[in-house]
Length: 386
Ligand code: NAD
Ligand code: MG
Image (cartoon, rainbow, N blue to C red):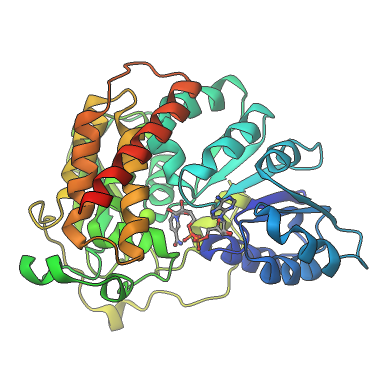
């Protein structure tokens, strides 16, 4: 494989640092061109010193001086602000953009990367939730492939490679069930962020960990699957699989099922996206079937986890409704992490915001930005009344 030059947006987060670990293991395959971070100046500086990219962006302007000063003795160019991130992903030298920012903030730079014809290794699922049809259309028109990083979608993508032209009947998305699986509803209602942040199988950023606890993460992933693989929500089935060994499955019309398995380690789907279609060794734990012994499955409990149903409703309604849902979720999760609301307030805030959002059937990108802003504000008003 010819060396690939990569830009990592959100390089200081869980996916960003694991992406750098993949690069660290394969200096002959990958070279870092650009690293960006929100506010974590110290880690961005350390990463820049180790990987020597052409440029870094610290999005939070108040941290710019600190980063510029710390990298003064290097060749690394230092920028700040979202716009510079959008300009730099389009640089000639960049082959692949890893979209690993969190939330709606990932949309603008992902759009910029696609418009510049760059391959996008997409972790930032909120981009596909908020603006899926627009983003997929850009990918097609600009010949800029989107390679899934989310483990379930990477699994389905890998299974589909073996499907050839055969029709796939159902995508089975596996879910760990999160930290509250099996808890009584009354206990979940009182759960604090400290409980929600204890994910059983994956170590991830705070927002996605709360999304996993509410199962909104799985709801997002249903929408992500509909967009990436061009299927209807009726063709996506969510199954709880607490061991997180099967990352997802596809089922054909004859009932045959293909699954992709592995230890829960995000570096596997990250590396697959970066090196696609090739595979290379990767250090890390490997499956030991005799030790696992059994894999279990159950249906999700939609009453305890209403966010899953809200996501199905949002994708069925379509238009700007998934965007409004995402914005309300972002506001509600932030409030929950700040101890301003309780667990079931999250789904109530989202449901109320979705119900009030003026419907736009075929939103433009401007409509999406406007919907995001309005729904976020509407959700904040509801949160303030809680
Ligand atoms: P994280 O919170 O650990 O990291 C987020 C990164 O984005 C950080 O580098 C942060 O500095 C940057 N960032 C945050 N807000 C920003 C802003 N406004 N402007 C610029 N940069 C900003 O999150 P994560 O767990 O790495 O998740 C990143 C994305 O990947 C999310 O969309 C998440 O849903 C998705 N994802 C994560 C995992 C996982 O295992 N962590 C798995 C699948 C998908
Ligand atoms: Mg996932």
